[in-house]
Image (cartoon, rainbow, N blue to C red; front, side, top):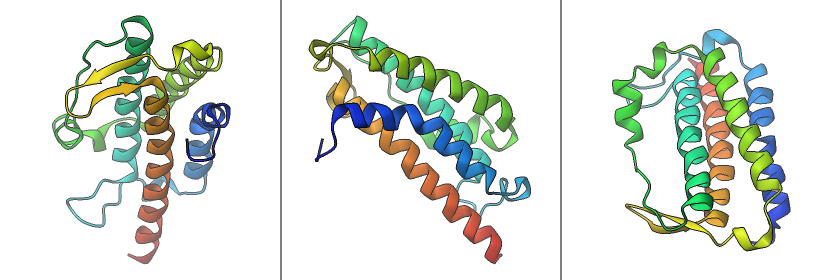
Length: 159
């Protein structure tokens, strides 16, 4: 894990919701629907995407643990954002869902014995994904979108 212990990664995962909320608290709501171009997501769309992704992560983690080796579903995030009208969704509802998905998964993985971490699911595009690989993906996913949210805010201030 590149010098970061699994325990540190689990704690980072557990802080994902708080890190997101801390970032959003710094940004006025009127900036949440700003898009610097048609092909970029607004902050609101990023939030909804994070939650849809988190639902996949919630299930993928459990699939690896309960049915190791089974294939999971991939999805096209651009199609989901467009066809599910992300920009019209209530961020409050989605943030509440994110909080509980993240908390329940954190509680699950924080208590796992070492023997569980090599369990895996099969991703249709990436192949075998261990639980440890899953953890890295979902820790980095929130952090990457927090950076994107901050960038959107900077672009909104300059517009």
